[in-house]
Length: 136
Image: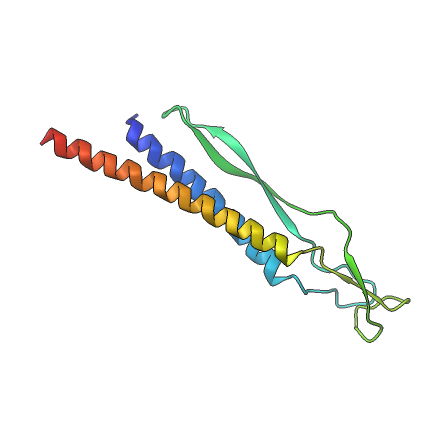
């Protein structure tokens, strides 16, 4: 396989993985205030994503793929709000275990990783163009 083509394939796998990561982060942020609807019900549980290495047998490169999307098992926040419909017998409401500051930091990291992969893809494309110009 053409080495420049494998650069594009590796960068594309990185962009696909970071796109999935951004999707998971956006779901977490969107549900940061989602509570249960019945007394004592569990709210939204933060999603996590993990990646794994995939060896490209044709190109010889290491690609990245989404391994699994899981749930963060850390405890829920509890707020005292006896008027809330999801309040338990003691007046406490379970709140999602989503920390918006952590999600924003993860979003920034995923965006930077996506950008780095895009730059690598563009560099490979430019190198391919330069090689074709030399062959003319």
